[in-house]
Length: 193
Image 1 (cartoon, one colour):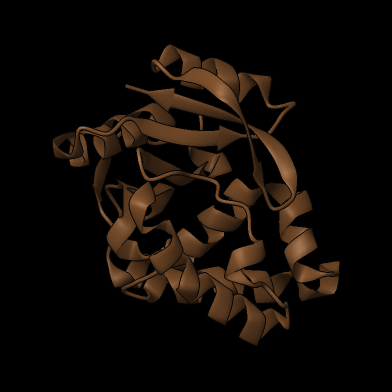
Image 2: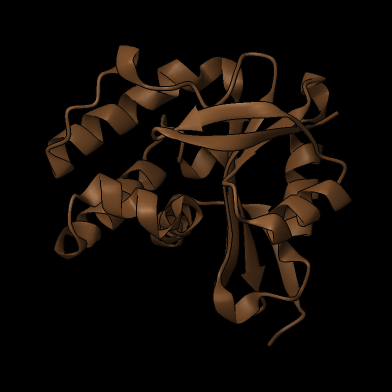
């Protein structure tokens, strides 16, 4: 375990780590739903890695902060964007998923996981070998600083059953505002002013 980790803006060459982090943040069940079967999971990684390398997607390196060790390894990621840009940014996801996975996503049929009035913390992941170093807190606080001029609260979704994450978010000032759907599943919606 290393303690010399810095938070920095992601670069295009971080796309593979960002894609891995996004899939981790989705959790196994949702990633498997996207894939359709376990043998197609590599295609899900391909989708999110491609989107991370793009300039204009939800998962773009431009919307991402990474935690980087002194030797250049990525220890964790946080992808966030202004909720008002959701539909514009999601176009890239729909095109890539439909092309690579053969899904049939249609914008009008998808749930909105965020809203215009918040900065949405979309994907947070700390890779297992780097856990226990407060990297999730550091990434969230750095992202809050990055978006402080917007005046909007931070928002996120947390899947039911992940009480340790609800506790973490509560310790950072997030409060539950209700439930929202993501990928057909009801999730806790939290905001931090």
